[in-house]
Amino acid sequence: MSAGAPLAQESSGPLRPRPYLLAKEIPLLMAQPSVRGRHLPLRQFVKDWFSPLADRAEMVADPPSPGSDLGDAVRIATVVHALCDQGAMAVPSWVYHYRFDDDDEMLIAEVPWHSALGASERQEAPDACAWHRCWFGSGFFEVLGVHVR
Image (tube, rainbow, N blue to C red; front, side, top):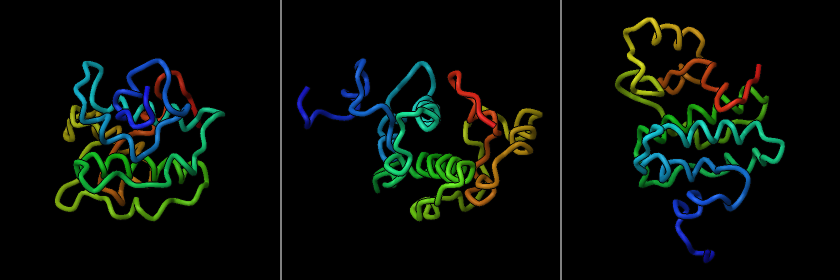
């Protein structure tokens, strides 16, 4: 595969260019149709974050590209913010450029706001969710076999 090959092509094979995703790569991956859900790249990012091979500073160094879907950028920024807070790591300044202005939203749109699940998710949400107005429960960090406190 050439060095100039698109990320989507590189990520779809058995080998990725590195053993972890970068926050700036997630919007392109979220935009691709997937039967496993559009938030799978965010879940993979969380799994990669807890890998011993992860370079967390590199993972969060750059924001989503300016052409990214704004809702996706808010969701990515919220997850990055919460992960950095949890790991006592400095939050990159770019995350503060992304928040929902008009209404609060759930990280995963399929979770109804006015439901018991939505209420539970908001009750267990990391502090970063309130700032970004994007909500998910702490269970989002317990994905794909990764369990953390």
